[in-house]
Image (cartoon, rainbow, N blue to C red; front, side, top):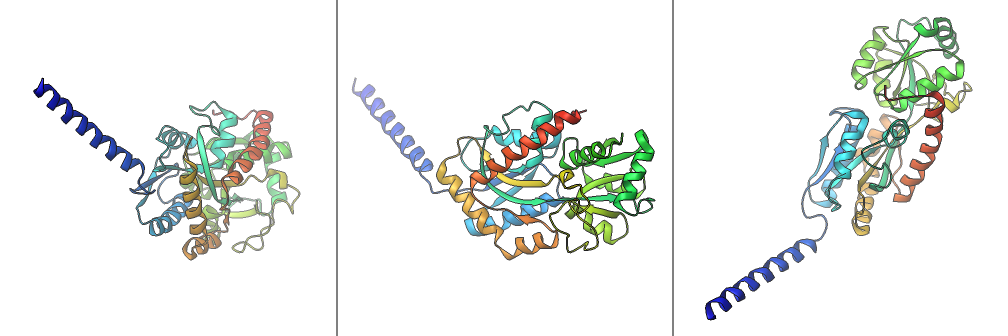
Length: 326
C-alpha cells in the first residue's frame, strides 16, 4: 500500500509539473517563436518581394524571425488551405490574394470557406493592371487595339498569369465590352506570359505595374492604358482606362494578411499594429512608390469590407461572362 501510495504521489507530482509547464507555455507573451507567412506567389515575384520587405521590418520590431514560405499552385488555393488548417496561434499566417478570395471563389467551390475559415488582420497594398501589347503590334493606341480585336474575332487572344486572376477577368470584361470573341490563354505566372507577349504570340495582356514598368522601359512591350485612378509616374503619357471610357473594366489586385479562423483578438491586434508600422517604414514606402503600389494598412474590418464589395462585383461578372476554371 505504501509503495502504491508513493507511486501515486509521484505520478500526481509529475502531472502537476506538466500542467504548470503547459500553462506557462500558453501564457507566454506573443510572439515567442518564429512566425511563418505563406505566400501563394513564386519567389522573386512582385507580391513575394513586397511581402519580404514587410516581413523583415516585422521581424526587426517583434524580435523574432518572420519567415516567408512560398507555396504557389491552384491560383492560391494550396497556400490558403494550408493556413486554414493551421492552429489559430498566430504563428502561421497567409498573404491574402484578393483575387483568389473573390474571383476564384465565384468560379469554383473551394476546400474551405474563403471568408469564414480565416481571421483577416490587415490589408497590405493594391496594384492596378497595365494593358500591354507586343512591341511589334500594329495597335499603337487603345482605339487601334479595339479595332484590331474586332477584326481578328476568334483569332484574337489575351493572356493572364492564372485562371481566375484579376488579369483574366479584366481581359474578359474588355472583350465583352467591345463585343469581340477574343480567346483567353492562361499561363502559370507572368514570366512566360511576358515572353510570349514580347514575341507577339498573344495580342494583349493586363499585368501589374510591378511586372510592366521594366518591360515597357526596355521596349519589350507597349503600354496602351493603365487601370490606376490617375496616370502613373513611370508612364505619364499612358492614359487611364477611366479617361478612355473603360473604367468599369479595371480590376485591382489587392493583398492582405490573415490567419486561421478563431485567432485570438489580442494576437490580431498585435499583428495588425506591426503591419501598420511596417507600412510606414522607409524601405516599404520607397519600394511601393517605385512600383506605383498603393499601401492600404488598416483595421481588420477594412479587409472584410473590401472582400465583400469585391466579391459582389466580380461574382456577377464571372456568372454573366461564364468564366470557368477551364
